[in-house]
Length: 298
Length: 283
Image (cartoon, rainbow over all chains, first blue to last red; front, side):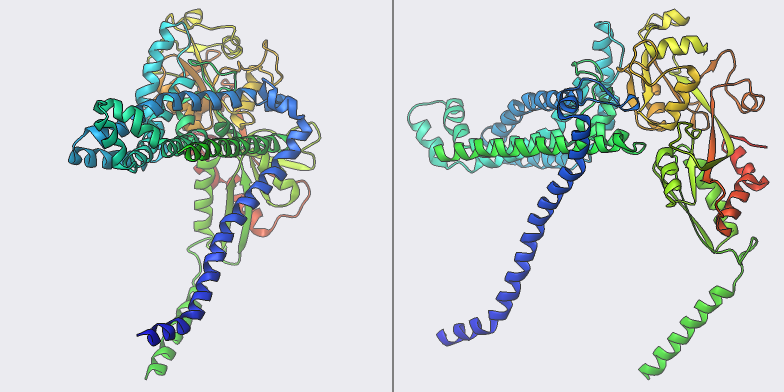
């Protein structure tokens, strides 16, 4: 018996080495791609920002490439506002759904609902855009008319579409995190005399915090990077964002003008890409550091 | 046995391959072969795809590439020599940046002013269009329509349609509120997106290529008292229009295939296809 294991180990040694190398190459490929993308973004985006002037580029309020005005502050603010609004609405709602799925609904209902929610996550963004253009935009038209504004796509419509798009991600990650909380937490809390809801709010959700935060990170990432669906409902005018007026997000700014751009205009679009890239990096680092802190507390 | 079989297969393969070379195209010049690299404007996509399809059908040894990346890139890449022929839906710039090129017109495209089908307005003057796009006219009632705020819809910066429209109507690119397109105009990145946006918004006005405007979805307005039609384009009474051009290097010798393609586009067969696409042929 012992002999056979040793023999097997010997004969498997080359296989082990080969597999090690293969895994190493795969791992390196991922790392190298990230490094290459970062370098590419910096090298293609930075020259334009330097040419235009970092302050003029980042804090300029007018985007008019035809008159060589490349201020992207309206685009940055529109992205931040749309994402912030979407997350502010989606997170509480998603948390409630996650609690319902894990602690309120019976198992069969929960399984059916979870299946549907995961299906929602797989719907292509252009479909969300279509639904937004047909269902949400006309609703916003009514609000705009009532307030004496011209009817148009708006930041609000974009935020609502984003809410629907990021809900499934946040729900399924949060539900998994809540499910992973040891049963004892709930049992001890109930034994100490708290009601079911008290136990959920004060014992289970705090214990699942880091998982919920990672769901939020994923949601923010999806919201800030979304292009197609937003372009179909946002109106896309590069003006300082207001809730019921058209707004152009960073992603839309790039994809919309890419085809016809040339010269400094195209370089400036690379610059917008660099800003978007930096944004996502910062959000990832910030939120994951919050996440780690939460983990350490536990 | 196996060897004999594979040998036989090889022979059959060789025979069919060779036979392929022997077959001459139904009509056109069999001696004409090669690849013509072209690219540029996306506005000419529909008619150009039809022209290339027909031309390649007649000359089966020639392939015409068409990269759709906008008039700007089409002209730039023709200067650099990447394309033999560039597609442009605007005229060449006269500021010196596009010197050394020849633009050959092959079709005229109307720019249609479009509004929602529910809109009561039927026509606008150039002055009114300028007023609407600069934001001086804000309500449809000021131009004879219902009491509703106007939603201005425009194309993205540096689109060929946008620059042609702005130039004819008298809108400037500079950032003055007097003459520039209002910055809060809803912006669309394609002809199709303009049509969809206008068809879904009762108070919207937009502009798009006449050859793509679909009467079933939107309403085409008259401009300066003339309704856009093939006849009005032909007699010159409809002034909101632009030209489609093939751009080549001045004085450069084109390859025989490229030359044949240009002759085809400008010849009667090509012009027939152009007329069939709601464009006005150059005669």
